[in-house]
Image (cartoon, rainbow, N blue to C red; front, side, top):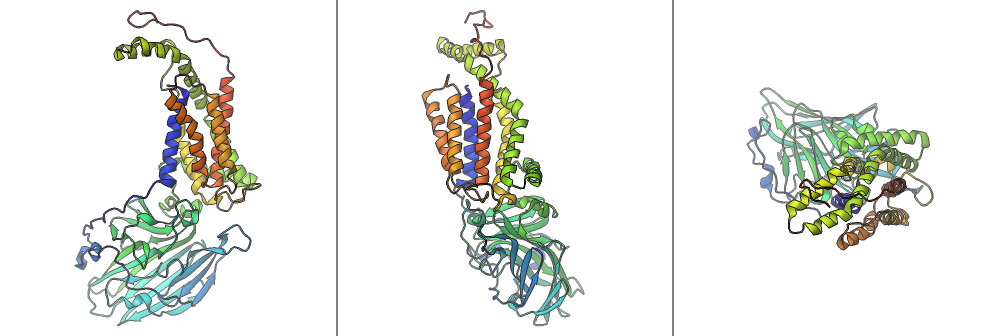
Amino acid sequence: MTSRTWLAIVLCCLVWFVYMRWFAPVPPPPHPATETPTAASSNTGKPPAEAQGAGTSLLNGQVAVSESYKTETPKTTVLFSEIGGKIQSIQLKDYTETIQKDSPGIFTIAPTLSRNTLGTFFTQPNLAPLSGAKYAQKVDGNTIDFTGSTGGISLKKTYQLTDDPYFMQATYVLHFPEGAARDQGYLLVPVGAETVQYDAKTPLSSWEAVMYQNEKVKRHNWDSIPPQPEIHQGNTGWVAFGNRYFATSVVNRSEINPDVIFSKSAELTGVYLRYPIVLKDGQRDVTYKVDIFSGPKDYASLDKVPGMKQLIDYGTFSFFAYPLLDLLRFFYKFVHNYGVAIILLTLVVRVLFYPLSVKSYRSMKSMQKLQPQITALKEKYKDDPQRFGQEQMALFRAHKVNPAGGCLPMLVQLPVFIALYAVLGNSLELFHAPFFGWVQDLSSKDPFYIYPALMGLSMLAQQKMTPAAGMDPTQQKVMLLMPVVFTFIMLNLPSGLTMYIFLSTILGVLQQMLINREGKTAAPGLVTSPQGGTK
């Protein structure tokens, strides 16, 4: 197998990865999960939420927009609403919608996204008025209390600002009158949106809902969130809704373990924490505690909560992605430019894998030198495939050539390169980060498509440097098509990512030039087969 064939295998793998990540059609929503009763939910005596029907809202109404209290942190502006006693909006101070100087700060929560995110909703009709009631407000330093009531039942919400400006503690205390029924249905805390423009290729429009349960992450993009409630039960950590760089998350801190529901409706599309409300004998208060995160998906901040760094989608090879991100940030501390940091990171990765690349190139060159004899063996033993296999292996052994020697080093490197691809395509560090010249935002596409074009040309040059010995015409056509295909795939990718792929390709060309400068040896001579025949 020639070097071009192995290159085709690697390129096809990369094409498949890029296609599945960015361009593959979204599969139809899965059938809703069947809820298995648990100790927390079976004692309510209610049918599972699936019975509500496709597209039926889990909410009991909309929360009206009403401003009541605004507080400032070093990084955010938070607006509370007296209607529903909830967080109405959070605007970030350090991140703007565009790179223009007059661009407004990004809203992670806003009525234009959803009026119901972080509200409290109930399945029992007697508790439903608490969702949109007018709450009394009390402020004491960094603590904001809201109290509402209906029919002798009260709900007190306490929000506590923390040292981390993107995290907030929230406590909900339901107080019931003496003699209240034990089963009070469910409390629902949602995060999501009503109607947004979804585009998987645009970072701020790549909306998804995520949950962390049983130490595993499950994510739905906007299109795949099912219209019928999809219920998950287990040890729940958190739920979140957001785009590639920003998210709002509700972290369970209560002793009461909630279910998780993914659902799509007119009132809210997203993910919910669902807490059972069950009173024990003599109990009148039920307390729920959560942490609320709303801000940038910064690796260092998210790592404070178990499993939450997985909000950043680094894919299958995330265990390689985290050290690569740390190295990228390390370089940035010295050069203060993420474009330059990408160049340094690419150089380091290429240098580390240089011995494997040399081994791969040398193995492929050895295979190319043997191609004339392999072709002769095919012709001689065209009617005896078994004999051909024996003679071919004898040829490989005589010249100490491993037929997989060109592929295995590439396969070892592939997970790291895919992880680096994921880091540069999903890390907050590149959001609105300038490079030089025409590239002023490494998280957006190249405005003049210069890097995609350069990458296509460099790939074509790399192919021209590789002899086509043993490659059939069909393979040659496929390989000539690959630079064109990759150029079009890269047109809308972040410029930081396209710059990395272009630079990595150039370094690959330089490596191949060094290998090709090695002294040319004569073609391998004839060998004797195990059966004694002369070739």
